Amino acid sequence: MGESQLSHPFERMDIAPGIHLDCIRHQYAQDIFKLIDTNRQHLQPWLPWVDISLTVEDTQAFIERMDAAREKETVVCTVIFVENEIAGLVDLHAIDTTNKHASIGYWLGKQYEGLGIMTRAVEALIRYGFMKLQLERIEICVVPDNTRSRAIPERLGFTLEGTLRHYQRHNKNQYRDLMVYSLLSGEYAMKPNN
Ligand SMILES: CC(C)(COP(=O)(O)OP(=O)(O)OC[C@H]1O[C@@H](n2cnc3c(N)ncnc32)[C@H](O)[C@@H]1OP(=O)(O)O)[C@@H](O)C(=O)NCCC(=O)NCCS
Image (cartoon, rainbow, N blue to C red; front, top):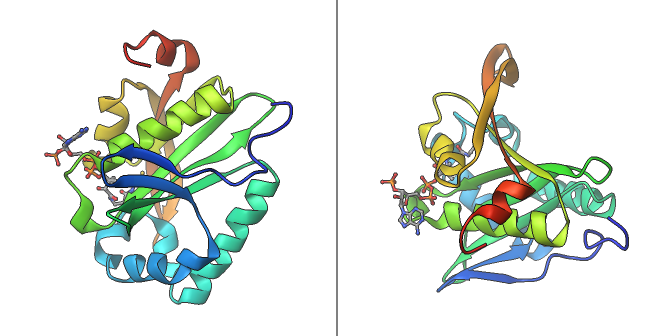
């Protein structure tokens, strides 16, 4: 990746009127934790980490891990703002600068669902991944019954590659399959308007 973009904070990115992404920062810890805490029932079925995010200190520790991962160039973690309120997170993680691939992960507060916010946020990170980080491949992994989440890579033209069996551990001893979707840089470049 040469002189890396990743060791520098992600710059604010306006993605639609009233909606922007910003690099995760310590000053956002309280508001991120509040959003998690008021959305536990909504998030917990899909995101195993919700059960261990019990205090604002846990969110602060998460932000510290994201800072360290950014330094190591393995993560770009961004916060989604809607009218200057924190609405959720979207990230590029497991960034492999040798093989030039990464995964996208995301979540929204329940009150922000159904408005196309996440599809646009994911589109923006895809553009960042392919254009700025020069990635070759971006993947999104989803459990099969998370239909809202699966709709995002499907809407954005990803290819379903297959299913990883019992790949994700939930609730201590429940294992879930993960469906793997991917988009390649050539496929992205061929889409109109990119
Ligand atoms: C997964 C998750 C982010 C999806 O949220 P979402 O609101 O369904 O996704 P979007 O923000 O892209 O909105 C899509 C909806 O907005 C509509 N929409 C409106 N304008 C749109 C636009 N410009 N572009 C795309 N969709 C638009 C779509 O038709 C769709 O409508 P629907 O709700 O009737 O299906 C959310 O359900 C969530 O956070 N779930 C819990 C955590 C989770 O599962 N994370 C993912 C783990 S893999």
